[in-house]
Each structure stands twice: as structure tokens, then as C-alpha cells.
Length: 111
Image (cartoon, rainbow, N blue to C red; front, side, top):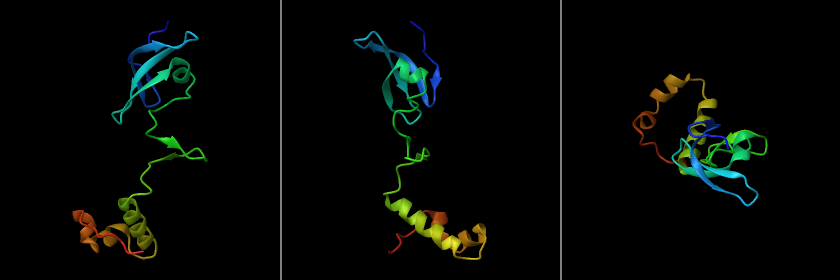
């Protein structure tokens, strides 16, 4: 039995052994930086199959996603980003023209 306490696997840090499966394989309780704890088979940790508690999941193309694309804040950001792309102003000048974004009171865009 290998001691994994304190070792980091992707984003997970092994805390303690947390039981044994019927086939004899051990499970470990791990801590993710997002605050969640997740129990993982030791083989999934060792071969890199499990790297987080699930807070970062790969999209079909293999890139991670932030899971915020359905929120109002993301839609506002996406709208303002599109506006930035359609202007000739550099970003600092564009931001000066929108004081509500600096103060955090930005209105929701109308689609």
C-alpha cells in the first residue's frame, strides 16, 4: 500500500485513504482547490484519469470550460467583448468610455 497523503494529482491533493473497493483497490479522499472534497480510486489518480473534483470538465474538443456560459454576467461580458471588437478604440480607452464597467454596475444588454 503506497502512501499518497499530501501528493498532488492534477488539481487534487490526497488527504487520507477512504476505504477499499471489493477488488482490493483503495480509494482516497482528495481536496480540490475549489473547496470540494472528492473520493477517487487510487488507479484513477495514478494514471491521470481523475484530475479534479469535476469543477473543470473538458469539452468534447479537450479544452476546459468554466461553466459560466449560461449566466447573465457571461452574456454581458460576451456582448461587451463583441462591442469592443467592433470599435477602433484600444481597450483602456474603450473602458474609460464605459465607467459603469469599472464600477461594477454594468447594465444587462438587451438582445
